[in-house]
Amino acid sequence: MGNVLKASDLHKLLTEAKSFAGSDVTLPMLTCIKLEATETQIVGVATDRFVLGATRVDYAGEAFTALLDKNTVDTLIKMSKTDKRSANWREVTLEIRETELEFRFTTGEALTVRPADYDFPKWRQLLPGNDYDDAPHQHLVHSVTVAAYNAAYLARFGKVAGSHQMRIFTRASKPALVTIGDDFVGMIMPVRMADGIGNNWVQPEWVGA
Image (cartoon, rainbow, N blue to C red; front, top):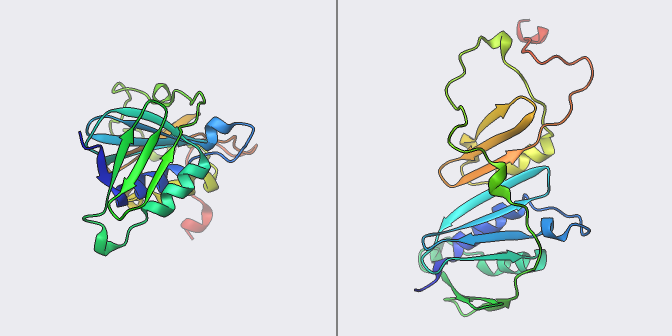
């Protein structure tokens, strides 16, 4: 197989996933991005324990998994940045070896990396299956339960392509689910609300003024 994807897709994959990676060097597995490839797609996923983001791009080749450290990710993001004129033809070919990955670009650049050897969180187990109730909410507005979120964490989802139509499925005190288009799914953990703030929707006085 060719093990090929577009350079612009690799850039999108790593850039979006990097937004959800951690910065705590004492937890190196959370500063990495995990790549999970099937024969038709590559999923890039990262988490810092507070948010999780998984994004996919098209790919044709062998299945593989690899954990890329921050320095490798930063280098590949620079190498894969592609202008509009070459976006349709600039590609990346992956040479998959037992302990190494080589990224070769059609424009001549190449990088050989040794994937990190950490235990990455089993992120798929955190996402509910198809039994999650996503039917339209039937309750009245005054009975809707609200959850609080850190806006700085929530803003990371705005870096994902298509986030102008982001959907958030809230589950009271449980992590909220985020979907953006057909190629992105994520989670965000709620934060504790300040004392005195109720759980029900109450129209602020200034709205009706």
